[in-house]
Amino acid sequence: MSEPQPIATVIDVQEASLLADADVAPWASLLADEGLVPHAPDGRARLMISSPNLRWMGIRFSELIVAIECGRRESSEAEGAFLAAAFSTNRMLAWMERAFFRTGYRPARIGSRADPSPGFTLSEWSRGAGDPPALQAERAQDDRPRRVIDDRWSKSVFLPAGRQFHVTIAGATEVCAFDQDRDIWRIEPSPRLPILQRLADSGCRPTEWRVRASALHARSKTVRRSH
Image (tube, rainbow, N blue to C red; front, side, top):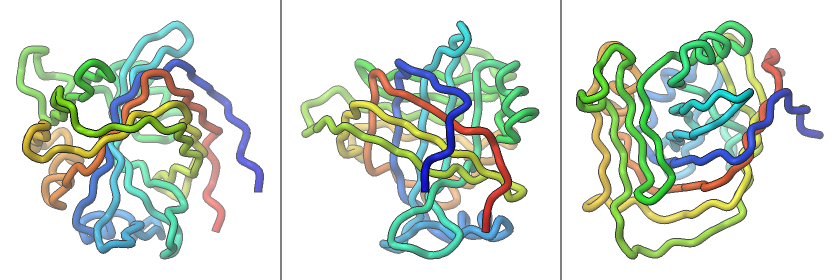
């Protein structure tokens, strides 16, 4: 089956991402109402936490996205990912995402960088710029083994209420293990950012950094999910 045609393509995206694993139960309960099941081949749910810096229509902004690999049935390979939470530093673009794409984006303070120490932060929109972030991840500057791959992620992104769109993310990607001793991973759950409580409750544990200095992001229109 051919991939859906993109309606928006952004190039030269700088992105710091983490792959993580977590207890299955809290995520299975989230997905159950959507008729989806977590992809957990080793007994742990697989999460993607990504923070890209983008420029679209002349507007510069940052996002932070939490997604869980899943499918409509258990399989050896994830069919796609469910968009559990999404945030943007641009209030207008967050509104457009909700109104036109039904993606649930919310405005928030986000700090994201792909170099020299990749990482990201997330804070409530109402918090001051100098307040401690509610979520923080940062890779230590060290000489751990790294490799660069020509990565391409092109799959469905599932949304609530039986909707989905298709995303392609492609580009040279620096990959290395998350160092539990030296890298930073800190969560301070906030009632206005409920996704952080779910991350904490599920024992979310980062496993791998994926950093892109110049990536392509493309997405299709939002459609009803096929069964």
